[in-house]
Image 1 (cartoon, rainbow, N blue to C red):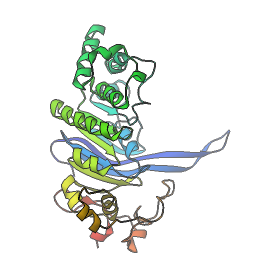
Image 2: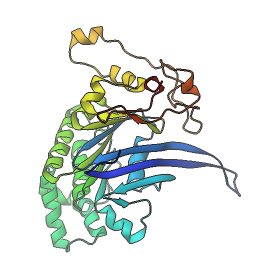
Image 3: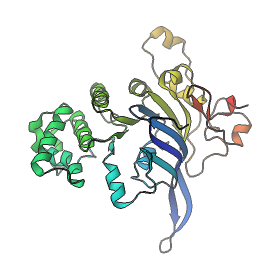
Length: 328
């Protein structure tokens, strides 16, 4: 799966959160398998979309890649260096190259800090420039994200949701990163504002040569911004392909079900199209099903699906899928 031009390489990534019991002496009685063995690469300069239902482990994946959560198992290589072995100052230096744009622009900005202090904070943490140089950089960044540099002394409550998210983008850009995890950056915004933020992210990618992991649950948005798309379900990646290939030829039944729910702005096609309704609920990540994680809800389930986990395999042209329907 590894190839030239890869910026981030993820192998066997697991993030299990322990479940403990007892008041005085706590012992582990189980684990929430939020992320359970992921393998994928993100190429330099591309946007990899990561989609799936709420609670499938998308945000946890992003945080584990950045080492905000220390993974339970697996490796993450960034620019050829293993992040899972770095600690202290080495990890802090590496953080300059990786940043995150958070989901909720209302919760991710400190209400007691001015916009200038919020955007300058990464520069202070990494001891970059003098105080006046930092303020010059903040004004420059506010211009880059489409905000008035005179807003530098205002507080987050004085801004709309879209403006707050632009402040979050400016903060992420402050230390000139190469890689940004966009954790559902538009899901908390009005539809009219979402397109503006998406266009801003695309412009910034072109301007600064950024690489994105774009996490979302809206497939139409992901298709617009992504080069490749990974479909995630219950802690595992079910399918990974070029965006047009995935929409034209989804191989996994879960991808097919997700895509059948995306509205098409043509009433003739929309009327003929058949929705795939998945029955039942998503199983608990504490006790995932035996075999394929999707076997309990899959409309095309086979006997082997309930017994053995399918291999995540390349079916040509970089189209990966983990499904027994294609491995018989």
